[in-house]
Image 1: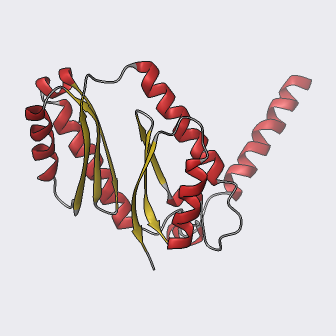
Image 2: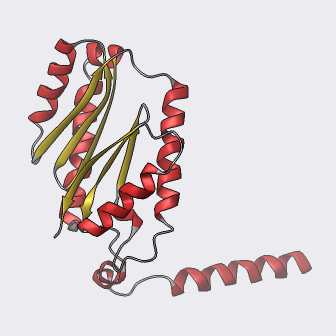
Length: 194
């Protein structure tokens, strides 16, 4: 009986919490949610579609998939192609596939001619990215700055920084990134708001 009462109490509590967090007007939920970057909701959706479509196109090509490691990242229509591919011919093929994807405004071709990176290299790159993102959370001195505005991509120790930022924000982000272990090079692909 005691177990049944505790179960009932737990379920009741969960229902109360769930009901209190449901928005009565779905539009008000969007308005109240803090915007993590300076892109419109439409631009964020378009960027996701570009990344998904480009990745699917590249993965469907057996030659590219077997001889390359390609990463596609898009921010406000600017698309970064990074990674490794076996030769110049494949590199040109990858860029030509990506450049016909609708809504791309600019392509940053940072593919290198090299064997695809291994799992250890990719894990190290992810660690660098995570360390930078964690460090950006410490920025408290800039008004209206949210670290989620910065897209951080790392390939073979080269860090690419994307986002719509003010010049002062960009300078601090670059300085913080430079201080992180394992960073060999920083390439800024910022769109400046001022």
